[in-house]
Amino acid sequence: MTGIVYSDTVVHAAPAAFAEEAPYQVAIVQLEGGTKTTARIIGGERVKIGDRVVQSGSAFRKEALRKEG
Amino acid sequence: MRQVAVVGTGKTAFGAFPDRDLRSLAVEAGRKCLENGQARPDQIQAFYLGNFAGPSFTGQNHLAPYISTALGMKGIPATRFEAACASGGSAFFHAVSAVMAGLYDTVMVLGVEKMTSQSTARVTEILASAGEVSGEIAAGSTFPSLFGMIARRHMFEFGTTRENLAAVAVKNHENGALNPDAHMRKVITLEQALNARMIAEPLGLYDCSLISDGAAAVIVTAMERAGEFNRKPVRVLGIAQASDYLALDQKDDITTFPAVRAAARKAYELAGLGPREVEFAEVHDCFTIAEVIATEDLGFCERGEGGRFASAGCTRRGGEKPVNASGGLKSKGHPVGATGVAQICDVVQQIRCEAGERQLTRHSIGLAQNLGGSGATCVVSILGAS
Image 1 (cartoon, rainbow over the protein chains, first blue to last red):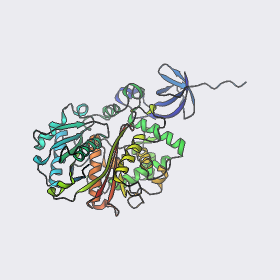
Image 2: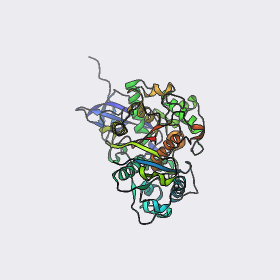
Image 3: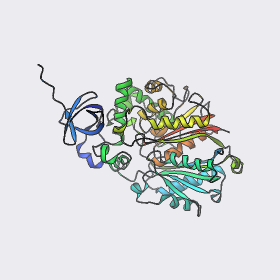
Image 4: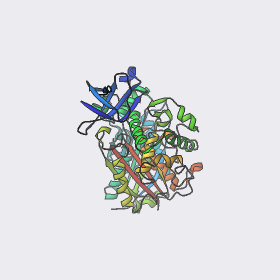
């Protein structure tokens, strides 16, 4: 499943359960078909509004740039 | 429907009070309110409590009779209302509705929260339970991060800047510094706001309201009974509550709050006036971006213009539409369940011309907007001199 980043944030002050993972990025991703979901962004690369992302388990990662030609 | 008035107000100071428990804060506000309204406990026919998470913060449940009996009110209906950060506003809405409908003549609305006995990480977790726990919260969202995503999208669509948000923080701290009951009576600069540590990007420390303890109460009565209370009654001109999805990702557009727009439309209609006639407002600035969007959704400025409206000084005490002359949640503090009731106290205080150094020159019609969660509940109340 792929989608487009609708909005994002980087959480610095995390709840107790996720404190060790902070800072981490969370985004609202608009999926193909239009529905939106909130998910963690993984893979080490930050995303911004409009970026294409690919689902990876319950999270998303930035889609690798397609090779030209 | 009967005309309804607020005849008494009472508040504790807002702050971190390690020696005070939830009930002692509530009782202090309730007693001050009875005294201010010159009312006796036996004149109160029902007790409406606004409280978000007393059981999680303190372990005590069944809070409404726990507090009403401590105030000397025996046998009357006593009920707790929970609507996240709009718990206080919702209790007020239901109390006013019951008096309007003729169910009671005189009731007390009291809002309270005791938050500082828990660690910030635990408070963050409890507050997050006002979002959709199985979805956005499970993904690691916090309340600051939900409003961070709202801010990011607002910036993307309308060109709102961090400087615009900082202008809200600077203005609210400037006002709160004049409020003897405020949690953080401290003036801040634009640079301090911009350079503070990040909480949830793009929101920094000064974009976020405070974790506070506190309580506030009002007495609501039928206008024809107001004379018994020997205080300048303030009329409830219009009031409405509206709702929306809990989860941000369910909404078509996160840069506006449909529940705010719906509640405002209904409240304006009942009051027979519009945003132009509102002379000042207390709005729900849980985060600076929330105040920016509130000024748009309430019709004080055009959609997308809220940030520039703040930076232009329009919402300062001397501006065209003073917003949060009390200091707002930002500087006054945000004991969640108390907030919506405290906003009513602040509006009443301005209308009665009792706001001291914060007193506005135009103060006969005021609006209070109380938001729950990331917009799933909103209560808008419009009050006026009678």
